[in-house]
Amino acid sequence: MRNHKLNSLAPRLSRREFIRVAGVGVTGYSLLPILDPLNVEAKESVKPRGGAEVCILLMLQGGPSQVDTFDLKEGAWTPEDFDVQTVKPGLRMPVGTLPGLSRMTDKYAIARSMGAWDLNHDRSIYYLQAGRTFSPNRVHEVPSIGSVLAYEYQDRRGETDFLPPFISFNINTDILVGCGMLPPSAAPMNIHSGRGAPAFVLSEDERAAFERRQNFLKELENEWHDADHERARIFSDLEDYSASAFMLGNPKSGEIFTITDEDRERYGKSQSGFGHLGFACAMARNIIAADAGTRFIFMQHSSWDLHNNIYDKDYHWNQYTMNMELDLALSKLLDDLETTTDDQGRPLIDKTLVIAMGEFGRSGGALDELKGRNHHIGSGVALFAGAGVKGGQIHGATNETGDEITDFGWHKERPMYPEDVLATIYSAMGVDWTKKITQTPSGRAFEYTEEISPKGPMDFGEISELFA
Image (cartoon, rainbow, N blue to C red; front, side):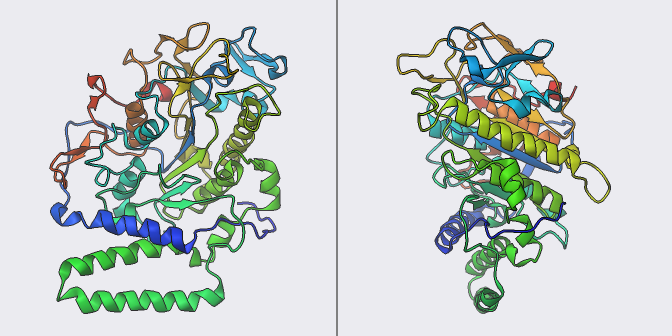
């Protein structure tokens, strides 16, 4: 990793936020007496692809317009300064708003046949994380894919792994799916990348007080161990969770979670919605380079819900703003993952699966009466890169207005749904996506990739064409 002069801008985890999230972890853990031990089994024998050691899922929250990004459709509605160009045979891109990504189309694959199940933002965002319909009865039981991966990798953590296995950036905690019935050690550590000092990296004058509190927690655990085994287990897991949350006492954390002046310029000072996408991408690169135990990074770029005046540059959020923020941050992330190597000299991109997608697409063709685009589940777009994904490929196609799929572009001959994306992540990470936990608080098995969809039973699986 390059050595830069560090500035004082680092993310912050407030005490209130830590207590809230830790409390959620303990609440989830209180379900676990029913689950001792967790029974995990696979429905059938499949061969996970493997190759990825970490996954970055970038959620373009609000639903990006496919016809203004990676499935560009030209018409009288297309602004002239989008500067639409043929960047390679069969691929036209809005070079004026996506200049960085337009120059590197050989680095990623595009899926133009994405489908979604629900037009509601919150329910679709939940689906993207959990791979199933939201159920109030199981909301505290069902874990996100990030927590499942953290759980799957828990026995592979090394002595030098000091980062949490699951880190999220800029996710509103109201929509962040956590560890559910899994242990608190699998819960996400949510970071707001745009907040400044005081940094959540422990300073020397805070370390002594924190260690006293940790020792006190251990004393309580030891005192109650014989008298109340279950209470001791909860305290033990809270200690594990807090150890992950305050891993930033490690001296290396200061470099990982501090944004340099150079990276602030290179990745962009994005301001859309909640947090800074550019800063989150720079930290994600640092996390992967550190190779300290993180397996899943979930980040959000919000404000893609463009219903009004989307081509008006003076409007608070518009297509120009969103495209250009995404373009700068994501292109620099892909560049850096390709040029930065690990201890074995392997480019970081070779072991990192990167996915950028929204919870659904948007209506195509001409703009509506509000000069915007509405929610649309009939077609959408996603970008895939790294970990064996073959760049330069386009999978699927839509009609001239971009709102109807005309070619699914893969072997299932149907839209690619969130469950298929999750199965692809599991496979790339070497995890059998047909696994299920059979002993749960509700008594209903938790399937890593659920078979039941809003349209009934469906055979979900890896999008293997991405790796062809």
